[in-house]
Image 1 (cartoon, one colour):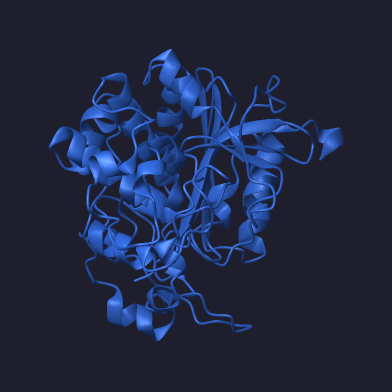
Image 2 (cartoon, rainbow, N blue to C red; image 1 turned 180 degrees about the horizontal axis):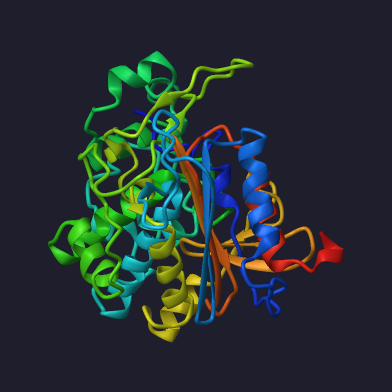
Amino acid sequence: MIASMSAKAGLLIAATLVATALPASASSVPGHPEVQRVLDQAVATKIAPGIVTEIRDGRHTWFGSAGVSDTRTGRERQPQERFRIGSASKAFTATVLLKLAAEGKLSLDDTLDRWLPGLFDATAYQSGKITIRQLLNQTSGIYAYTDDEDFFRQGVGEEWFKHRYDTHTPEQLVKVALAHPPTNEPGQRFKYSNTNYILAAMIAEKATGKTFEQELDRTVIRPLRLTGTSLPGADPKIGGLHPVHYSVLFSSAPQPTVYDATRMNQSFAWAAGGVISTTGDLNRFFTALLGGRVLPAAQLREMLTTVATDGSGWIPGTRYGLGIFEQKLACGVTVWGNAGATYGSWSYAMGTRDGRHRVASQVNGDWASLSVFTDVLSAEFCPPTSR
């Protein structure tokens, strides 16, 4: 199966991120009517069956929704709903690696041959020149396994149904990538690749002797009490209350058929895009992370050190850190966070550099225009005259 929509068309969404300080909120009116108007319009124009947004601004929390979680029953969207967050998972994975660096269990300057000896033998890659930092900031030059044509084809249309429950090991995913030549020399330029985050999680397992899921739980999920967040591995279910994930399965037809893609084995994305979460947990995570309550100051500075994405074919005007991005909105305001796309679910989690003002949104359909998320962010962060 294809690794989240993060690689071909879909991971565009995961790119819409951020990286400097924001001014005071432009939306001080209780109820956030401008944001609610965007949500209502998204459903009215059939951008998605349903959309949710949670806003946290200091001690105040607001939840808005429009549309439905299930088109068959008409069930409305709920604040506690869990959904697949796609490449927003990379922020969690990078946090685990940085936490291990803070604990002295590895260094960002360690090369891959130290932790994964033999893995790159008989390939075109020089593992002794590629560092963990280059994995996390997407400058390693390692090919994206999701760009492999045969691999990608397994996640399109009818092929998706044949492969939706396939289990992929990290080693199998990396093998697909290493069959292709490097995209660039290590550290030379930014080139988005899910393979980087599969390798990063494999290194975390080597450094700790535990599964990556166990380390994610120890370093992030339990300390922050993210009760709606998990990395289910090969389990195809979404536990607890959740919306139906509606997908067109990468169809290019003018009026594509929409399918229920809720149940699927996301081992094809694993640490690069397999996390399940909620709007509340995403806001809690980024608030704590950017507020300095998860990583020591030195590691947080590393995370926020960004590289240019210009010329990579990625989202214009962005810079990429270690698992997070920076991007300016059209009004000139800069926001920080991460975003992701996978079958039937697109999500954004953005906000101020200090973590105090956060916006997390999700649509339960994968044909939505990305503009719906930037419209939500603009409604919350941009002065009315600049929209």
